[in-house]
Length: 195
Length: 195
DNA sequence: AATGCGACCGACTGATCGGTCTGTATAAAT
DNA sequence: ATTTATACAGACCGATCAGTCGGTCGCATT
Image (cartoon, rainbow over all chains, first blue to last red; front, side):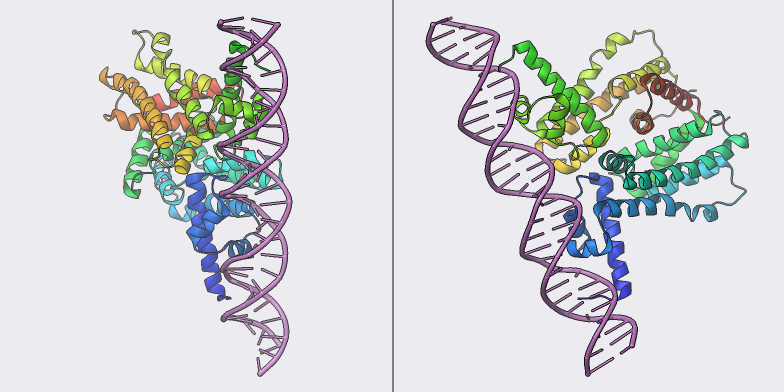
């Protein structure tokens, strides 16, 4: 029954993609390994061949979604872009790569495995790195005098919370509608509600 | 072993309070009925005396948190308050009553029981009513010319998403810090980031 | 004083969970 | 051609889950 190496990697990708969607929609505990197998079209034995445990799988996915997704960011933006332009680009990017965000499942994961467990530490580290990367974008906006509100860390938390919270309402939208929604929401945040 | 009626109601309140916190922090599936019993200081049999099922308990809590919490709202604000002042008040109110919001657990709940199941319909109805109530606040802000951005429904979704998303970052804060954070975030939303 | 009923307990059940293990077919190495 | 390593499949295990049920205790009614 052995597949070629390429086929095996494809199987692994199928598992990751299936699990990513399920974790995001159903949460960590509510997603069973059997669910993932059904969605990925493999057996439980096959899944455990690629990943040691459910925790392992989740951390792998989180790392890919949060860390690895920054990799193309620096190339996607050029140095001449204003922080505001970058934020609009980030909104698109958020819909594209984190359309079903793992934040919610992540918090559940932490409370389940414990923040000081090895798995918890690994996940929190990934999250921290992601937030710090975002904070650099915000800091640039402040440094250049584009934005106001002194504290970059606090501002980052608010903006990321905003984008995360917005995702609650785009589940039933198509991707283009979701992007429009996020762009409009970004405009709102930049310009404010008040006349 | 029978307690008086007052004591029984207290037991029920204990269960609700314990379950509310656990559902909010751990999610729906990850919170077991045993967890709730331990936190509430009662037995599983006792819990099932007060609630028919886990679904039943969750819907009861959601109804109390979302619907019943509006009840004092109209008295808390007087007619002379601007929509902006009301929004600041709502920020406080959000921290006070929904400090550990059930939104996340709610989505998980829906995906678990199905949006068209009876339990799903009941929960979604509660959520809808809550959002519509909030939309009236937003509509007032638009009607009075205080706020810009034509679509009240869309604007409501964005603001509620914002408040919901912000709650990710206040788990480790005290209540006063959380309120300060929310007030600052509300100011941000009203005035915008841009200079 | 007797009795009924509400509040509660905890052992139990069947289903499902995450994880293990053995078996097997085949690609890759020799 | 033979052996080895890999990529699965699926039966199986102990733990835990939501929910049930018979029993106990004591307030409340008569």
